Amino acid sequence: MKSKFRLYGIIILTIAALTLAACGGGRTETSSTGAVATDGATAESADAAPADSGAPTSIRISYLQQFTDLNPFNVNNPAATGVAIGLFDTLVRVDDDGNVIPWLADSWEVSEDGQTITFHLRNDVTFSDGTPLNADAVIYSADLFQDPDLFLGTSVLTLSGWEALDESTVQFTFSQPDVTALYALSQPNTSIVSPTAYEEAGTDAFGINPVGSGPYTLEKWEPGVEVILAKNPNYWQEGVGLADRIIWRNFQDGASALLAAQSGELDLLHEQEPKDVPLFEAIPGFQVGSDQTGWYSLVLNTRIPPFDKLENRLAFAYAIDYDVLINVGFEGYGTAADGLIPPGSWAYEPAGEALHRDVEKAKEMLAAAGNPDGYTFKVSVTPQPFRSQLLQMMQSSLAEVGIKLEIEVNEFARHIEILRQDHNSANAGFVVQQNLHVDPATWLRLYAGCNASVGMSGWCDPDDPTFDDLLLQSTATFDTEERMAILHEANVMEYEAMVVVPYIFQETLYTWNADKLGDYHTTFVGGYNYLYLQPQSD
Picture 1 (cartoon, rainbow, N blue to C red):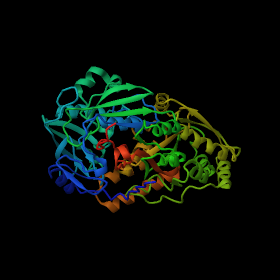
Picture 2: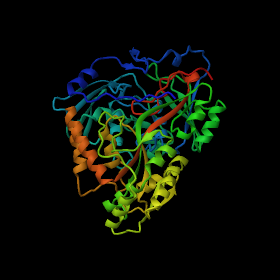
Picture 3: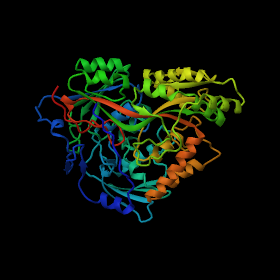
Picture 4: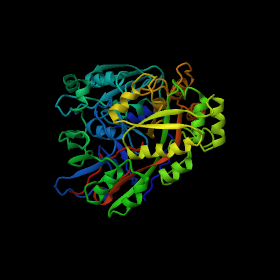
């Protein structure tokens, strides 16, 4: 198996460095081979960039997770996000080395106090509906990605104001200096959308017929079957969107995806199930790679019994047989978690001893909570067999101490509806598979903070703002050691509270047809990375 464990460099940049990098001119990006390309071209290996035969090309990608919305401010799983990055652009992007690079904004300046960023937009970009991408479009989009009523609203927590200075200049104001701001503005949930199309469609319909400025447009979407993206002939950036079509095919399970790969009908698969690795490696031309960029966790609702008591949360954590999860569920592709920041992050530091099973300690915690015979709780999970299998593995070990886990499998739309219910939802927990974001403060806020845009299932203490305050403090300083110390304090606080039980640091596995796609690697944060691939003709 081809393994790419990236040792991510520290990405803390000074305000001056950010300003200099932004004003430095054309785009420079380093490929996985170490070659450098400038002026909008992206370097790839010779194998990844075959001569153009003129024949139509496509990249066929598998996805297991259902999704119902391609509105970038409502996308709710990795597959939907993967589709969205082909349809939309952002002001800036992050390259393979973790550097912020110009994109829709070809330069920017940061004020001396670090609370204002002025972006200068390219003047040659239009949306796929023919309307111009200008300052008004950026402001319109900012109104949306900061709208708390949308699923991924308040995407940039410290962003307090935004205005157009002229047709090609926008100014963003922040409530405090924020070292993560530019990285947040590189994420798909801060995409720039066509105001004309959005106004005509409305929020819900735009999620079905999205219009952006990306290298691809939506050609066809048959929910639960396939999504087809067609190359945008008017895309402004050379070297991006090299395939004529991106075909996303939905499979119910890994076995179906395996059959498609064996029959030559699949080129790229994320969400690789560990048990299938040897089978994919046996397919001629296919390779399997991995990044240590993610973790699986169970998020607990602390507003209702049983997890309103710390002792019950600790009992749950002590009762799990982590060895079974790692060695059977993940086939050894992972390690027991020791906090909420995975080893792939620059800020990784153990928050405590790695989670391990201790039956006597679990029983002791149950007795201390006043329920020595255990308790029953329900977990919502999306219809992906692997997630249900992990929960089923937990059931037997939990049952030994009297904890009964009920699994409720919900289609993604229903799952999201449950998350959006009030904090008294009957579901006491749900499974999260989280990949590394550029900065740990981003995902800690998203999955553990009271200000989390999706944090509506009660996994924080609204009466204790300490955790959220620590995250804000961590983004306000540009001193690396100080940031490390603050994030570590927040990590320890959340780990000891066991509101989010991070039961494994996973190796994120992915499979691709190397004969067709050449050298492939995931993005800096472990996501889909098909935009720069030039496939062999079909």
